[in-house]
Length: 93
Image 1: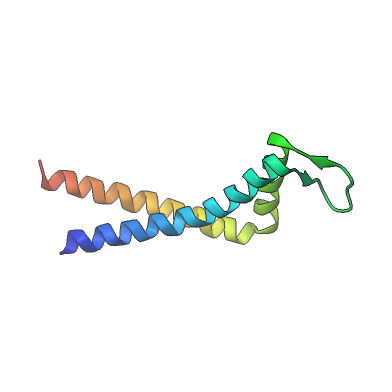
Image 2: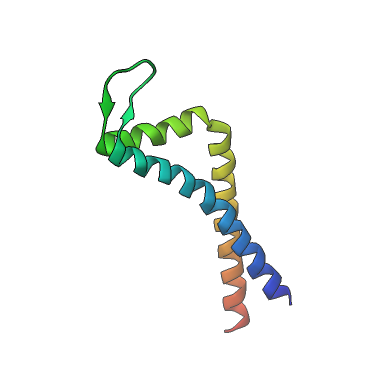
């Protein structure tokens, strides 16, 4: 029973970590193909990898607190996953 609860917690942590990253990547990919205006009051529209990076850095810069929370969640998820796999290996050796 304990193992099932740990796996459920692990799955929820990965979902909580992946969903915000997928949201940002969706907007970056849309900007890659459709382009984005660089900066405020800019008439120049950029496309491709430059647009991808511009949108990604904009999300990091203007949503910095969410980026920090996401990064902490990612670290917690990775550490928890490693801990579960190590304990699982010790049980089955």
